[in-house]
Image (cartoon, rainbow, N blue to C red; front, side, top):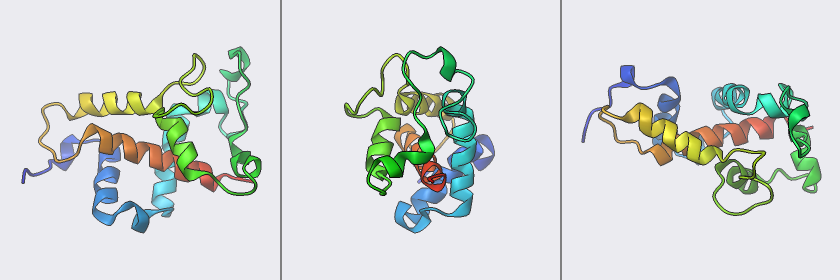
Length: 148
């Protein structure tokens, strides 16, 4: 087994490693995980969806489609947060609604490409898919935490 050089890998990768060691069920909704999701949201989503998730980000005004209020996902789904559906929408795997349109990027592809670039030349046991999975999960957990 190759050793992982943690000093060469971004902090998000440490999150991935911990997720894989703990198993996603054991690590679900830990405060640190939601905090990482908040940072990921700020970096990847807030420009369109707004800092509060209400769809009022600075880019929203120039988009042709309305940017949804992400604080009411559960409300729009009979009071239940649709974890799998939200994961698939962010990842872009599958054909759910307008995701992947000109308006919303396919984040899974971007996250996998980003991970591949950052992992090049670094000995590791993690795959770009695992990194992308963790980033998406952190976003999903954060979105669940901001529901009204």
